[in-house]
Image 1 (tube, rainbow, N blue to C red):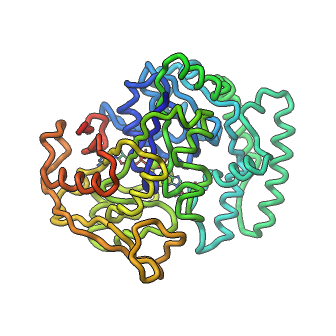
Image 2: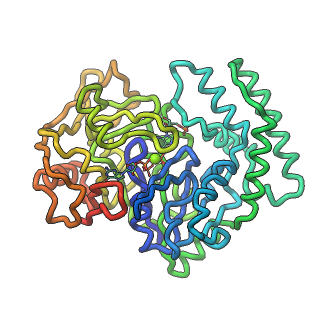
Image 3: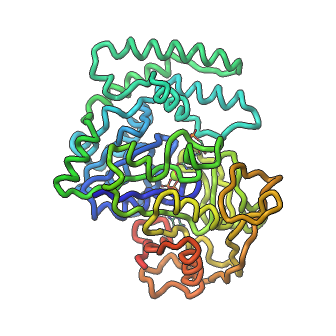
Amino acid sequence: MIDLLLGLQWGDEGKGKIVDVLTKDYDIIARFQGGPNAGHTLIFDGNKHVLHTIPSGIFHKTAINIVGNGVVIDPVIFKNELDNLSKYNIDFKTRLLISRKAHVILPTHRLLDAASEKSKGKAKIGSTLKGIGPTYMDKTGRNGFRIGDLDFANWKDKYRALTQKHLKMIDFYEVDLEFNLENLENEFFNAIEVLKTLTFIDSEEYINNAMANGKTILAEGAQGSLLDIDFGTYPFVTSSNTTAAGACTGLGVAPNKINEVFGIFKAYTTRVGSGPFPTELFDEDGKTMAKVGHEFGATTGRPRRCGWLDLVALKYAVQINGVTQLMMMKGDVLSGFDTLKVCTSYNYKGKEITHLPYNIEKENTSVNYINIKGWKEDLTQMTKANELPQNLNDYVAFIEKFVGVPVKIVSVGPDRKQTIIV
Ligand code: GDP
Ligand code: IMO
Ligand code: MG
């Protein structure tokens, strides 16, 4: 059996933290989609780690970590991640396994991402510029370069052919883009040599065998449901299926093997990059959330946009993913507000609706809130459910009732220890 852990909003819900907390209960942690656009933060023993491609179970000596076929890998970023972990004596050869079917982000994929964004002007997606979109385009266009290709003697021929095509495509965009391909390639080839020291596997085979042998697996999502290529706020989304079905295609597991689906959300909402955000705040409340919550992107450092919890969107994400348990993060950040607002319906083209419409735009969508009493207590030192303030329990109970799924974890700070099972 396999459990899934997925973000239910626009990413950065705290997936890395919770995967790290849960890893002790699993034999294998597996990433199934996305790439180094992700930034998953883990804090323990006074140290902070940000992982981009490596699964968040890597610090536990007992767990095998797998980068699944659905992931796209930038060798340069991957090498940096390995370098950052070098002092921890992790046996990467046996504890970090990479799917041969995962696709490789080439330097020119990153350039294409930049050219595409530049050509869009104001309509840009706000991509992390890690080459995610162009790499998935080559994957679905059946032109991609896969990890397993590195085992062939002539892999550089394939690399060259694809790169030449990309350079022509970059010209097509007719934008100013400064780059030194030789430098980028040196860095890339150097990183490939490091990557080749790791173990490449047929991860679908490995994972299905592990399941047959009774091993426990946790699939780690990246991004969030509202950034899903099909179900997110298209076109302001990422290029993979971030939702539960993505774990099936991104690891090669059948739907009937999925056990629990952990859905993780912040007690409020954030978003980095462009795109609709109905409950976004531009006032002091939003600024307080950003400041207290340190809302800056873990990958790009960009400020995150902040707003109230959107239960219309949350309910939608719970439905699409078949969430069985919820985890509420960053409750501590809301301490001190007299009143909290939660969005329970939208006004869309003059009608009140409770589902996510096709096109959310400022001109056609506004939100309806209900007020819930806030709490003043500092939660960050609390360790037990019975210490949590009644007003927080009421907030949680309202959410549970609205979306129809129980909240099982309340997180009260970024540290591994600041996690309360309720
Ligand atoms: P991910 O991409 O879903 O793994 O999340 P990120 O790591 O990008 O962003 C979550 C941020 O919130 C990180 O800086 C975490 O250290 C921090 N964080 C996680 N849980 C909590 C929490 O309960 N309270 C507070 N204050 N910070 C948290
Ligand atoms: P984690 O896993 C938050 C956003 C980008 C942009 C859009 C498309 O840390 O939650 P892309 O680089 O994929 O072309 O960007 O998606 N985005 C994220 N936002 N957290 C992430 O990952 C994200 N990955 C991509 O900001 O709006
Ligand atoms: Mg993140």
